[in-house]
Length: 125
Image (cartoon, rainbow, N blue to C red; front, side):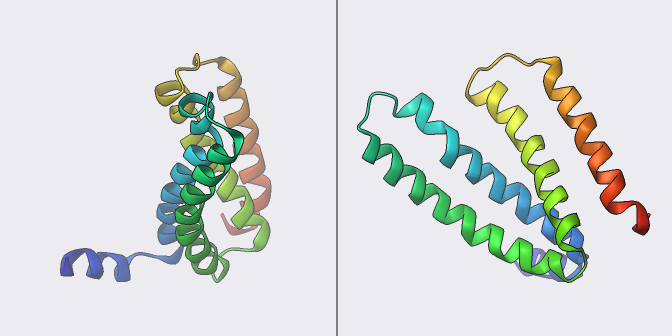
């Protein structure tokens, strides 16, 4: 455990931000979409409460990610980074968990995100 704590403290803020956003977006994907697969026949209020309970854990991780990242990244950079992480979590979630077909549209979306990343980070590269 001490090794993990030392590793955490030695990580640059942007790396911590990315790691926390990966975790946060995993929770977010389940909170936003898993009820469509798992609770489709349940009353709407059950899906809402379940999603909110999952989203609670998303926020526990996402708020620190944004606070840590905001010291090293601008607000725009933080937002684009979050969207890139979101897409990188969503595609495997959609394909592996929700059993959606893998389509080239995900690749095109990723290329658009790379363009967005270029423009928002170009002054820092």
